[in-house]
Amino acid sequence: MKKCKVKNNLKKPRSFELEVLAIRQLGYVNSYRDGVTRLLEIYGWINSTDLYKVRTMSDDAFGAYCRNTLFGNEFPQ
Image 1 (tube, helix red, strand yellow):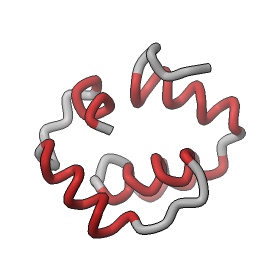
Image 2 (cartoon, one colour):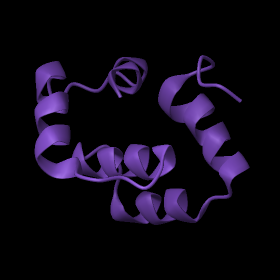
Image 3 (tube, helix red, strand yellow):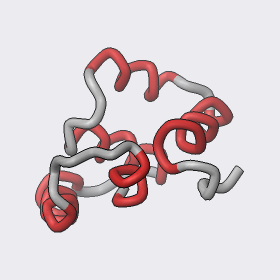
Image 4 (cartoon, one colour):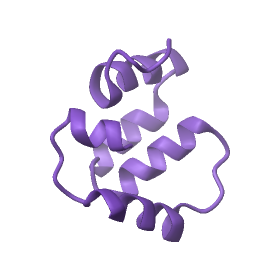
């Protein structure tokens, strides 16, 4: 998520707050995808309309979204 923050030039939450928020609010996740989606919501980086779109994407579309929007080309295919 720190990579996402840097790539998208996001200022909030501060770096150490990412970890604190995750510890306090994330809890159990069912999958990597669930964890990423929930963290986007927890950090306030995604609105409810976009959150719905992300949750209903196919796995291939989610991978492309991660590569093209969130993390950059280093995200595995």
